[in-house]
Image (cartoon, rainbow, N blue to C red):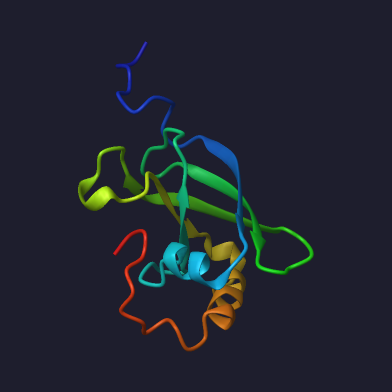
Length: 122
């Protein structure tokens, strides 16, 4: 047996995560444009490790269907983080997506990406 992981779970395992974003301000706060292929911060109390594979079912604004996106955890904000930041993980979109989810998000955020408003990550 290996050493127990203090974060819980096993690194590299794939999990399914559903996430709904209903308005532009929440989308802005969750979007991570500084990550290659784009990504989203997802508030969650579940334990993840950097590198965990995620299959994201994203309900975006008025889209009629959930968008399936493969990704991996590239950011973790733990409980008790400085600045009262939301607890959760940042998920980088996989190359297989070919930028489709990033383009869709950036279309919704057109004109507000250069804003100085704080987000969940930066």
